[in-house]
Length: 69
Image 1 (tube, rainbow, N blue to C red):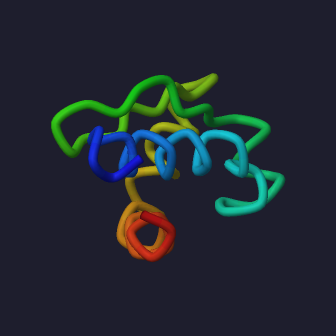
Image 2 (image 1 turned 30 degrees about the vertical axis):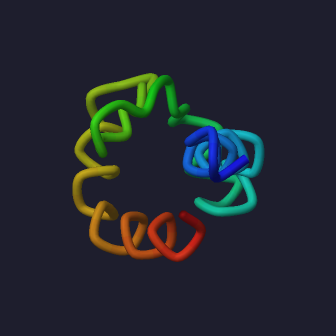
């Protein structure tokens, strides 16, 4: 897999599949990862309030996701 450059893709999809486990059930109810490109994870939220909340949680979430990737 690594020879084909699929390693990162598989890890990213693993994060998508385990999203609720990684970010917690409450965050996962309101925020969904939509894409990962060029080192940036795009997350869709169901409200501007959750977008604001996610910005405040970003350092913690980024650390946790980096551990997974």
